[in-house]
Image (cartoon, rainbow, N blue to C red; front, side, top):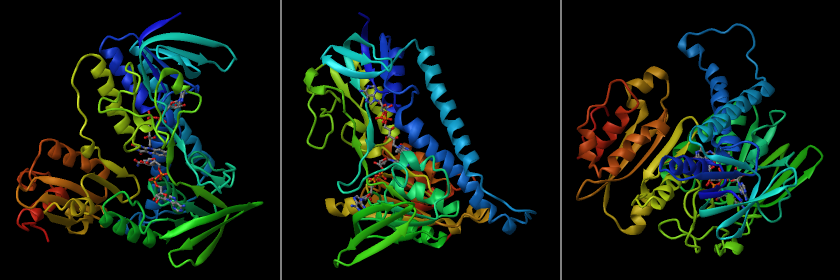
Amino acid sequence: MSSFDVVIIGSGPGGYVSAIRCAQLGFKTAIIEKYSTLGGTCLNVGCIPSKALLASSHHYAEIKHFEDHGIELSGEVKVNLEKMIARKQAVVDQTSGGVKFLMDKNKITVLEGMGSFVDATHVAVAKADGTSETIEAKNVIIATGSKPSSLPFIKIDKERIITSTEALKLPEVPKHLIIIGGGVIGIELGQVYLRLGAQVSVVEYLDRIIPGMDSSLSKELTKVLKKQGMKFYVSHKVKSVERAGEAVTVQAENAKGETITLEGDYALVAVGRRPYTDGLNADKAGVKISERGQIEVNDHLQTSASNIYAIGDVVRGAMLAHKAEEEGTMVAEILAGQKPHIDYNLIPGVVYTWPEVAAVGQTEEQLKAAGTKYKVGSFPFKALGRARASGDLDGFVKILADEKTDEVLGVHMIGARTADLIAEAVVAMEYKASAEDISRMSHAHPTFAEAVKEAALAATDNRALHV
Ligand code: FAD
Ligand code: NAI
């Protein structure tokens, strides 16, 4: 029987990064993945393919503004969806192949098959050909991720009533795409198909889209997307989703008990994801699963079985690739006797629409609820030279700082390239910077990053220069 220091179940960003760090630290490491491609949800049906389609559809949307820039196109500009999706798949295949390369380079044993616990130190790997192999593990890291969740009355048929997985490979541009759930998936994929010519309606249960983020970001994103033609039904609870042939009917009820009926040809169910532990036989290893389906872990990501750890989407916290990666690294370092630490408050969140939305730290709503006294510095993109030069005028950067100490408590931004700009805020907050610290640092001109400096100036005695 093969024996390993660490066996990792699941090859998503949590699992494969953890495997690399384990190997770097000298552990004999194996990774088990039930699919034939490595990289998990993120690389195969999540982050990477969605960003590929967002990039392709963004290029198409930009063409409409070419004339403003003095670029005249002769002839018709058309979308070839099949080719766009084939390109997306090529990007996915290349990225997944890159993970295989990294496994080989780090001498990590890759086992293809479904992993399930025999007991706390043995994992069986059931292979596609019907055979099974049991391996021995001193330590196990569960990184089995998540799957789309749904509502009890919805029958997902994967053709017309779909999840994000199918939405990444549709055979045609929908005429009317009805999206159930105005969270990150709904809004990102909604913008893809809106740009490609679909009518897009979003039905959201709460009173605003991207409800986990600062409400000012929801408001600005709603404004921009409405301008682009997306329709919103917020404070609407979906009651039924039915398919008849190529038609899909969605009924939802508002707070007053009034029902609306939407007729479309596709319905995307994007109401969140559930932790995935099917077939893992966690109980055989003494690993406890919570009522919400998450693997229970302590602050060291250790489960109820002392040699078994769990990371990423399958445990509590944000379902984000970079959160899973940090946890994967942390567990490897704990196993090596180190004392790593993750500040979960400083895990940034990004929505890759255009304009991009990005945030780190506390929202205004959270600060108010905690009774923290804070000040606000805000700066609009339209006052920025670089934004005017490129024509990306929507959005703002908002910095929330402690009223007395000036320490930055939260940074919320929407606008061009904020997905990258947020890194500056993370660094600043990791080093406990004050708003004045950021305001006194030189930011190259003309860049979008100047909006961060200006917002910091605004938070520091209202000293913004360019408004
Ligand atoms: P996963 O990536 O889900 O990987 C788990 C792996 O374990 C899977 O490959 C699965 O097959 C395997 N597995 C499960 N059980 C077993 C078993 N018993 N035996 C063997 N293998 C098993 N996050 C971001 O940060 N940025 C984004 O832009 C972003 N975009 C997204 C877009 C979409 C459409 C979706 C759906 C998600 C997106 N996410 C994004 C979320 C991100 O994909 C997840 O947070 C991330 O993949 C979680 O990583 P993980 O390693 O915990 O699990
Ligand atoms: P989500 O939690 O972001 O959004 C789900 C939305 O559905 C919420 O706004 C919720 O209020 C709404 N909803 C729930 N029940 C409803 C009902 N009955 N009727 C109408 N609306 C209802 O989940 P989503 O978008 O499915 O994404 C899943 C996970 O994937 C997220 O946790 C996210 O972190 C991750 N992800 C991250 C991305 C990124 O980082 N850019 C991109 C895509 C996904």
